[in-house]
Structure formats: C-alpha cells, structure tokens
Amino acid sequence: MSDATLHAVNQDPDSFAVQIADQVESFIVAVTEVAKGDEPDSAVPFLLLEVSQLLLAGGRLGAHEDIVPDERYEPDLGPEPDVDDLRERFAALLEPIDVYSEVFDPYEPRKAPVACRISDDLADVVTDLRHGLAHYRAGRTSEALWWWQFSYFSNWGSTASATLRALQSLVAHVRLNQPLEELDGLDTDEDLTEESLAEEAGRVMAEEIAGPLGLRTVK
Image (cartoon, rainbow, N blue to C red):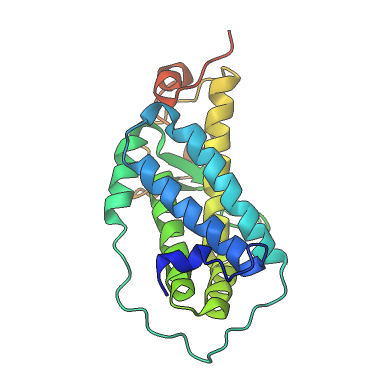
C-alpha cells in the first residue's frame, strides 16, 4: 500500500481510520517542515497548534473502545526510521527554551518534577506515530489503530501533553509579559532537586525570546 492509499478514493473519508491516519500524517509532515528552520519566527506558535491538533486525534483514540488487531503478533516492520536528525534540528532551533520541567504522573504524590526537552519529546512522538503509519500504509488498518491507541496510552499521549503544556506556558509568558526565571546549568542529564525545578525551565528572559518566537509582549 503506497502513500496514496491515505487518500484513496475508495476509502470513506469520514471513516475513523482514515481521519486518524490523516491527522497523524499531517502532524509528521508539519513538524518535519518546522524542524528545517526556514521560519524560526513562527516555530513555537506553529508547534503549539500542531501538537494541539494531534492530541485531538489522541483523545478520539483514547475514548474509543479497545481496538484489537487482526493478527495475534505484530508483523515485523524492519528497522525504525532514524529521528536523530529531527531531534538535533529541533534542539538547535529551540535551544534557548528547549528544556522544561514536568511531573510525569499527577496522581502519584510527592513526585518531583524532572527536566525534559521539547526536541526529545517531538522526536519520540514522531517515532510512535510513524510506526503505526507504516502498518496503515501496508494495509494493516486494525494493527495501525491498535498501535496508535496503545502507544497513546503508554507513551506519546503523555509526552505530547507535556510538550503542549510547555509550549502553551512559553507562549503565555511572552504574551502576558511574565519573564522566565533564569536557571543556570539546567540540563536533562543532571540529577536536579524539586526546588531547582520549581520555576519555569529556561535560560533567557521572555523579552529576549519574544522576537525569535514571532510573538509580541504586552505593552
């Protein structure tokens, strides 16, 4: 099944599978274009929009009854496409505001926030989505939907949600003219305490990133 199958005329465009596949493909195409860095001024607002739209597809998958694949064992898809280039491009593009703090499970008490990277998150989400898309393009629709639903619950749903919160917080800081506290040496490789992550992750003030983000501060 080729890429054209995603928009084949004999498929019902209103079907659940076609709609989810279309949203997945649109997200992958869009963020890959953003990662090229051709329009850095609009990168963060555009990512905010794309991640929000992807999570709509995730919500539909989450609300759907359990999807059971046709085959008992998942067919081998071969080597996964490399996302290191995508990760590195986003890391360079988002360098001043790439790192943020996140609590993985809000229902587990006394869990300290940990440092995460938007660039890592986006690459991980794309990896999960591409895996399901490979099944879809091979004609294994139930396998694709099962994978997207399973990985939504187990990985990409929470990852994309955390990324969305970081992007929304960043845009809000700029729009509301609320400077970010500078955190010296913040890095995802460090063992950081809850106190050191209490403030929004970032190394620059909001007014310094407003220009690169293509956003205006409130006068």
